[in-house]
Length: 262
Image (cartoon, rainbow, N blue to C red; front, side, top):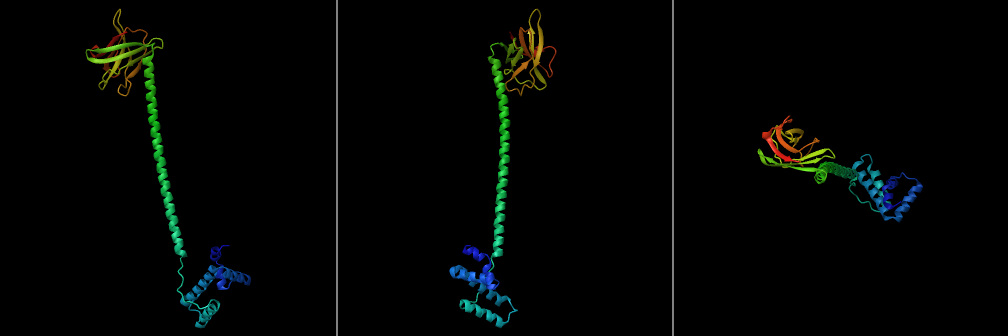
C-alpha cells in the first residue's frame, strides 16, 4: 500500500486513539520509522487532539489534560500548541459537487447543441431532397420535350400569328404512328383570367371543318409550354383560339391567335 493510501486509510487515527491491537500498533510504529510522512501525520493527529481538547473538552480536568500533554511530550518531544486544523473535507465535497454540476451542465449544453445541429442537418437534407425531386421532374420534362422535338417521325406544323395577335406563334408535333400530338405554345402570350387557349384540328375541304383536340390548361405553371393534346386521324391545318374557360363547341374566329397548314 502506498504511503498516501496508508495515511488516508484512517489507521493512524485509530493508532493515536489507542484502538489498535498490539500487532497493529507495532506495524504502525514500524511504518513511522520507515516513512517520515507517516510519522509527521501521527504527530499532526496527536497535536490536533491536544488542540481540540483544550478548546472543546470542558469535561477533562486540568490534571488529565496535563497528563495527556506530558505523555505526548515524552513520546515526541515538546508539544507545540496549535490551532485546530481546518476541516476542508466538506468544502472539497461541495467543490466537487460544483465541478460535477458544471460538467453536467456543459454536457447538457453540448448535447442540446448537437441535437439542434441534427435538426438543422435533417431539415437541410429534406430541403435538398425536395429540390432534387423538383429538378429531377424538370429534367424529365426537358428530356421528354427534346425527344418530341428530335423525333423524325413527328410532322412539324408551324402556326403563325393572326390578326388579333400578329406576333404570336406556335408549333404542332403530330405523330401519326404513335397517335400523339403535342403543341409548343411558348410563342403565345399568357391568357387573360377566365380564358383558355383551345387547339383545333381543321379539315379544309370540301368544307372548313374544325375539331377541338384539347385545351392548353394551367398555362402559367407549364414552364416548357409544351402540351399534349388529343390525337386526330385527319388534319389539313391546326389553329389555336382564345376561348372562355372550359372551351367552346366551335372556334371563336375573332380570337384566332395562330393558324398553320400541314
